[in-house]
Length: 197
Image (cartoon, rainbow, N blue to C red; front, side, top):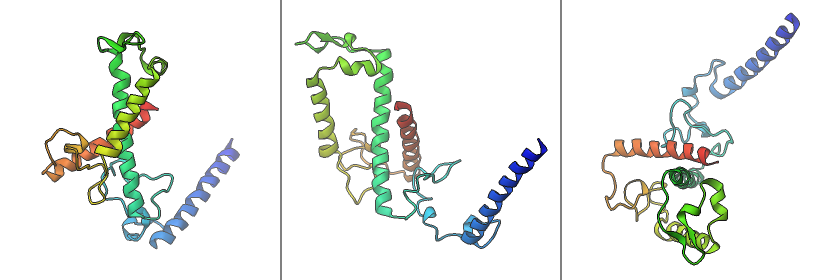
């Protein structure tokens, strides 16, 4: 038992010393002050929206390690769009448990809204013409109304109101409140992306 503990502690010590060597190479100090290493591409996006405590800027796959601002902006735009769709999908998964529209989903096929089950089972009940309508509607919104303008922040569409919602209120003038709401939207979108999986 003591030998196993010694071997485990030895492995831990080896990893620790390698980490200290690596840190020494990055910052010039074995105890490494991250503030000294200001040229790291890993720090390029620490001030962006969505960088939240306790994790900070989290990029486990290393997609942003090159510090390419255009690629980061495209990924952030995609993250926001997927987050918004996932939040709507989560609502679409929850709301039918409590409310269903009266009337018919497809009068010609005799399918009422109450006949459509909740969850993934609903896929088999919606007629192909209904799927086509949804696909065309989403495509029209995505490629027609919500076109990303390179001069605007990711997810900030010209034809939309506050935070991409077309409500006619115009842009938010309070930048602190806007950043707080955008951070909340990113966090909620990330949670919804995980929830809808």
